Length: 248
Image (cartoon, rainbow, N blue to C red; front, side, top):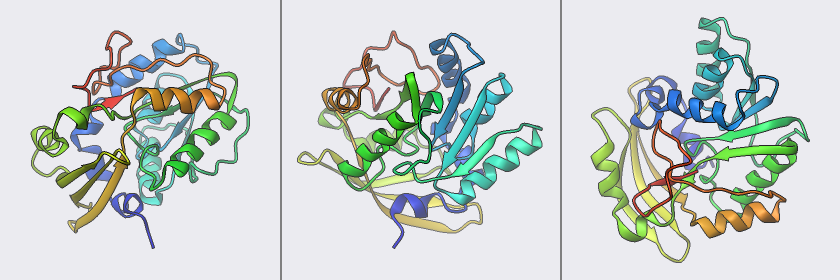
C-alpha cells in the first residue's frame, strides 16, 4: 500500500510548480550560493528534488547537481524542464532512506520538506539523515528545512494554511496536532495534472530545535545552526521564533 506522500506526488508535476510554497526558489538558491561561497567546484545533491526547481536553477548558475526523488512523475517533469533549457542534470530515482552514495558530495540540500520529515515514523526520518551523513564528504555541509514544532504550540496550522493558499492550490483541512508525537494530521485535497481530485490522510512530523540539534550531533555534524525559514528569503539573520512555520 502506498503512503500518502507517494500518492500525493503522482501526476502532480505541473500543478506542483504552481503551488505557493514553490515560488521562493530564486531567493533560496541565492542563500545556498552564499553558504558555499559561490564555489562552483563543489558537488551538490538535491534530496527530494521534486520537479527539479533548485537543481535546475543551481545548474544554470554553474554548479554540478545530482537530483534524487522517490516520485517517477516528479522526476519526469524535472527531466523535461531541464531538457527544454538544454541543461545536463543527473536526475535519479532513489528512496532517501537508502541511498547508494558514500562520501561523494560537498553539499546536501533538502528543501521544502521534500523528504524529511514526511516519513511515517521517527526512525524512518532518522534514516534519511543517516543517509545524508553517509553521502557527504568530510567536511561537508547540509542545508535543509523542516516543520517547526514550536509553531503549532501557539497557532492553528489549519488557519495558517488557509491564509496562504490560493484558489487551485493544495488545501489542508481537519488539522489535529498530536502533542505526544508532534505530528500534524490533516486531510489534504489536491487536483493532479489530469484534473483528478485526490483526498489524502496525511501526517507530518514537526521538530523542535533541540531534537534537530541532537539528531545531527549523533551523526557527527560539528556545527549546527537553526534559523527561521521564510519562503524565498532564507537568511542567517532570521532567529527562529514561534511565528515560523518552518526552520532551516
